Length: 223
Image 1 (cartoon, helix red, strand yellow):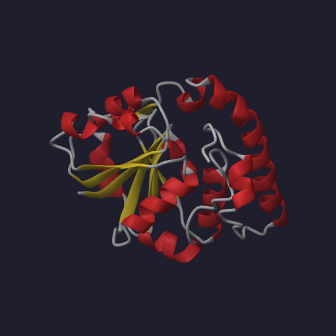
Image 2 (tube, rainbow, N blue to C red):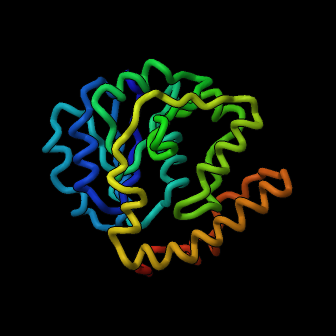
């Protein structure tokens, strides 16, 4: 059994449903983190999938990828490993079981083509290198940073010999012109931050920062 599946969602709930439709393997709990700020975005999902143990968190603002992944780990601290997925990546039905067979406390597992869009990380990795760096907000370069850190710590990545249907990459921003434009700025800022860490060899995480959080906001501001 896959202990827990954590899915941050900002939009494209149609693609999320496409992914949920392929699940044919036991999963302890599926946590959908609704980052859209609109509770109605996730309406109906629990009722549509009564055979899946789905819990939905409707958040007032966007936690971002790193914040969502970290929240999932914190909410399920006893898992031997955690599985994460994006809304725009659909697995083949047989891939769910393969993830469980290959994953474990010391493992980082992903498919051969989808990379960090669908992956698992084991408890011993988190114990040794910690959580994702929330200074990288809301998306892009969080995976590069974490991969560097786990590699330097001596962990390896296993690539399943199975592909995932990505439905076209980066559908979150491609489906929303506002997100797409704002990403032009936040992507560059995250790029600079990541490469400053890589070039210096100092992977200390700055973590969540109020000014960074406000500066990188994609959603309409709420006061």
